[in-house]
Image (cartoon, rainbow, N blue to C red; front, side, top):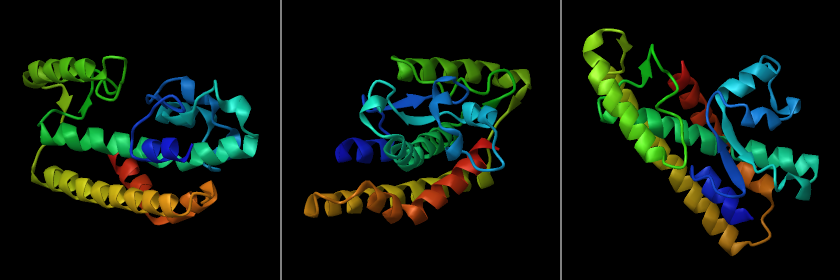
Length: 194
């Protein structure tokens, strides 16, 4: 189970933790206790997430399910930050007035969807209805975000080494060990989504 958590934290959903794209209704399974006081359930459905598979949720207590979902939120933030960085690096606008969520949608052929969306955005660039992220400052921001992502992944590797040395390391310890990195990714995610 711990290897599935570590993979999800590294931004790789699988059978245990599934990816709910931003704006999907699949992430409505977040309990209301996971939302901060300022967020509504509607805000949670706009953000998407990495969630414990509903097929496996019956094997866990509600407290365990909530802890697992809280732990892997950083993996979702990582996915969104990587998408932003890659869109800046390829000079494709990360936000379009016509279709803001097309770059973040993942399907069974996620790479083909992204490629067609990028080609579509490249063709629309001359229309003038694009709000694009181009320029020196945004490029520097993307590089700084990428450097932070690398630090986060290094921390995941360190945690994996601890798990290998201490196989009985509890999930709550993983949650605590990632506290600083989790906060950094949450801040970067807020920047990316604004």
